[in-house]
Structure formats: structure tokens, C-alpha cells
Length: 320
Ligand code: TXA
Ligand code: MG
Image 1 (cartoon, rainbow, N blue to C red):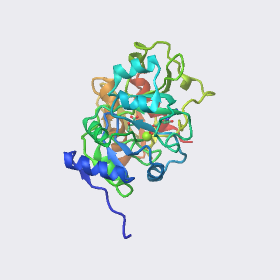
Image 2 (image 1 turned 45 degrees about the vertical axis):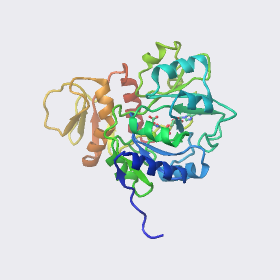
Image 3 (image 1 turned 90 degrees about the vertical axis):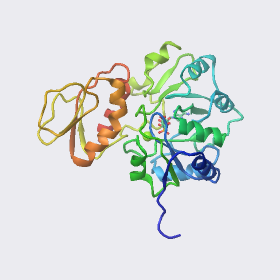
Image 4 (image 1 turned 135 degrees about the vertical axis):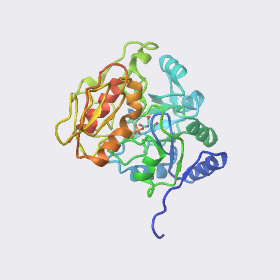
């Protein structure tokens, strides 16, 4: 073969969805929009396709992936949802919640995608393009964020194209992701819900349905989610967090109303709205990273979605 092809960005017409389904059936890699971030989808049952996906992302290890399914029925074919897990699914699917449950004997998700575990991570995405693709494909798609491993997650088709277009087959256009931060991951195998990754569904919404949340993330000796690499979502600029003001030669990522300053800056949310801040986070980090070597980030409150935003920021800032 000659030079690598560049993946086209196509609007999500019926014809293009069909084309994406055909590519997926033959082991292809398709970037699809979800309400959280763009995912790089491939057939969960096809271990060779999954291997290609890890290769395209340059994942340092084979972290287990999230299986995206069309609906609760498809989820129940793959995994065993307890009554509490089912209550969460009924309340929040389609939406930005991932449930880790025991895999069923009938589970078709490849061992490679599950990293050999006897559990599976499952979610039903809400974005209409992801729904259309899953509906037509009719089987689970694994889809990590469509960026090279360790870099900033993509919230637009252009982000995906910039980083990945020479390594994948197709990008479906789906606008800007509404949530902008990945799904919240709950281990739903035990008596109590266990938070494996804070994300765009705030935990108080989860505990309203199933109380008694366990937070292993606060216990550094108990890493529960494989693949919780400390440095992740990383820009190449140096990040300084909880900065009330930028130093000289730092760009500033502000939150809430600030006194006017000369420093180049972007504002996650002028009104201090955490949902707006979450949806802007990756795109603004990316924009500042392209122009500056050092970025100071304003303090973000730990309430509600602030949990997930601070989690992503501390991973982005960790230089190990
Ligand atoms: O919002 C999202 O969840 C996005 C969009 C594209 O849907 N997807 C995403 O997938 O973030 P990914 O592959 O980057 O995240 C997978 C996470 C990892 O942190 C992994 O450790 C965890 O899910 N995970 C997967 N299977 C697991 C399992 N069986 N047990 C524990 N954690 C698991
Ligand atoms: Mg990611």
C-alpha cells in the first residue's frame, strides 16, 4: 500500500451510517460522536479489530474498554445487572453513566476488550448518531475516547481529525459534545455503588437512586479501576492548578467572573456554571496548549461536576 489514507469526516446521513456499519463489520475503526466525548468505535466481539484500536490509540497497556450498547436489553445480554444496577440503568440510560457488572456466559465482548476480566463496563450513549450506529450495527461497540493515549479527549470531529485521521477509517460528524467529559463509571457488582471514575453524571444523582457510594479513588492503596493512569488527558504545556491568578508568561484558564487582565485567557464559564465548564474543558485546554507553554488554571469547586473536572485537571497536570 502507498501512503496512509486520511479518514473522511462525513455527515451522519442514513447512507453514511450504513457505510460506517459496513466498515465496523469488516473490522474497521470509526470515530463516533457521543454526548460525552468522541469515541473510537470498533466491533467489541472482534479481537483483531480491538487490537488495531489499541494500536491506533497507542495505549501503553491493554486497559479494559467500555462496551457501548443500544439499550438495556442489549446490556443484559452481555452483563448481569443487579436490581440496583438496573435501577440506575433505567434512570440514566441513555446517558453518561457506565456500569461495571459481572459478564454473562453469553457475553460476546472479546477477552482483549475486557483485558481478561470477568466483568464488563457497559453504557448506552445518548447522542443520536451513536444511537443510530448502534441500532444498525445491532451489537456492542467498544469505544475509548478518539485521541492518542494520554492526550486530550476530543469534543469535536475536527479534534479527532487532527490527531487520528491517518490511523482510522471514518469520522462521523456529530457537532460539539454536549457534556464534554467522559461518563461516570460505577462498579455495580457489590452491595454499594463504587465510584471508579467521576464523570459527567454527578454522583449525587446516583446516590439518590442507590445510596452508600464508596469512593476508592480517595484511597491511594486501593486502585480499583485498571487503567487509571495518573497522567492522562495531558496537554504538552505545564499546568498549574488552583491558581487565583496567572504568573508572568502563563496563560490563564479562568472560571467565573474575574477582574479584567492582560494575560491571554479563556473562561470555562463566566457565570460559574460547572456543566458549561465541563463542556468547555478539553477544547479550551487544547486551544491554550496550542499557543502557550504554561497554563494556570483557576480553582474549581469540588461540588457536583467539579469532582470530574478536578479529576481530569489533576491527571493533566501530573508530570510523572
Ligand atoms: O464517556 C465515555 O465513557 C467515553 C465515550 C467515548 O463513551 N469512553 C471512555 O472509554 O472513556 P475509555 O475506554 O477511555 O474508558 C474506559 C475506562 C477505563 O478507565 C477502564 O479502566 C474502565 O473504563 N473499565 C473498563 N472495563 C472495566 C472493568 N471491567 N472494570 C473496571 N474498570 C473498567
Ligand atoms: Mg480517554
